[in-house]
Length: 130
Image (cartoon, rainbow, N blue to C red):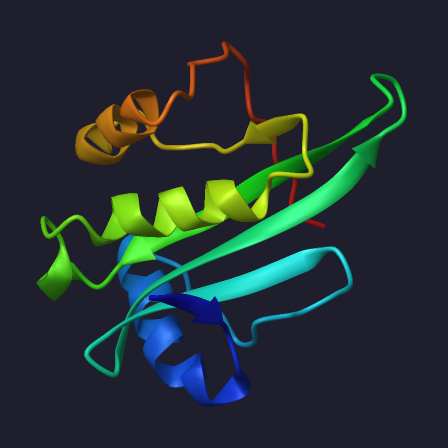
């Protein structure tokens, strides 16, 4: 079941994100356009993602980014990621476009995104630390 994240979930979500993305997060931030969600299985948080929605002033419509899709390593291969993504897509029904990024090395995840109707859109991702 996908549900809203709350601060009590932080320690578990931190481990999942740190493990999945080799990151060390200190806080999960919420804002009016970001929906942080956890996947709970038998009362245990085993997945996380967030959805950021915004208005595209050029195309004149709403769009969403699905970010940080991750599942506890001990629970992978059980279809949890796909269930999370299906629920996230349903939550974006007010958006004309849904985007996400994925590491090309994450072949299982990339196959799932293609099966869910996403297409590979050629782009470069640039990042700068300040």
